[in-house]
Image (cartoon, rainbow, N blue to C red; front, top):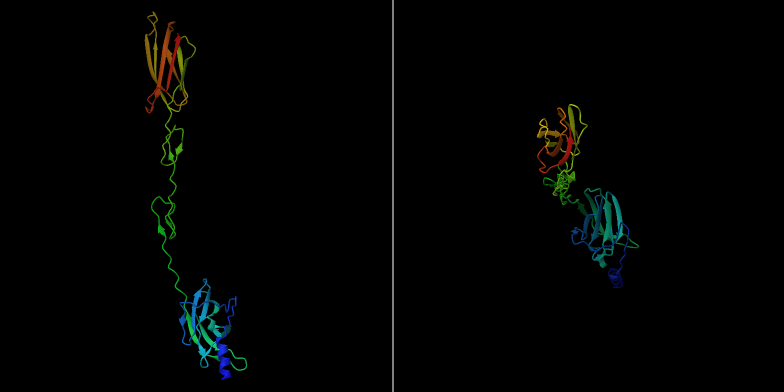
Amino acid sequence: MPSRRLNLRRIVTPILVACLCTFGLMLPPSAAADQLSNGLTATCTPDSDVHVTCIIGGCARVHGDYVIDAVHVMWNGIQSEYDFKCINGATARWGHDNGGKAFKIGVQGCRKKDFEGDWCGPWADYNYTPPAKPQEQAPVKCPAGSKTSTVPAGQQCEAAPVADIKCPDGSPTPTVPAGQQCAAIPEVTNAIQASFGAPGATSIAFNVTNTSNLTATCNYVATTNSINPLAPRKTTRQFNVPANGNHTENFSGAPTLSTYNVVLSCHDASGKQKSEMGHVETSVTW
């Protein structure tokens, strides 16, 4: 009878050993643990792609109704033993670098004895199969006008930057961002200069300069009130002056010693600019 009381005291005495190393760390039992044939439970879960942690739980009885206080784990012929105070709800922890592969362990519960052999229950196997890797999701196909044709699943497509708008020649802004308006081309004014050269015995030259980027079409009108019958009352000419260029209009004949009033009106030869781009009024006596 005293021996029975001693055994009962040993069963119910609460002893919890917490080991903070890789093997034997005491943790709460897992709700997803597999029930083994020897009264223990086991569950193994991956911590990473190469390492798995197994939790041994349950509170099996041996040698009649004695609660176990140690657990054996057997893997590949190597046996490890851990304190196992399951009466206090403790569990044993066993870690393994499995490299993502399946493996099998044997688990056994024992009651430690000081002066005789340990009382151990039967071995039970636990087979670990790594969970299937999640299937890779197909990339997202981006719509036309995106920066890339696809993006990884879960990411958003980005719109490709829109090219700047090229403005017409002559615009103060060569380009503007997409969606904006090019600045209006300023009208060309005062781009024509003209003057007569020195009068000759048989001719006189009228020199015209165009300082713009536009080709000019010029209308020349010369009038006189001279009483000399040899002097033409009105003379008209039309000629072009190249962009940023010069033109010389020659007048031949005999001098009449008459004064001619000249009006030169020039416009854009392309017709895009409607207003006058140059106007000169001068006079010459020849």
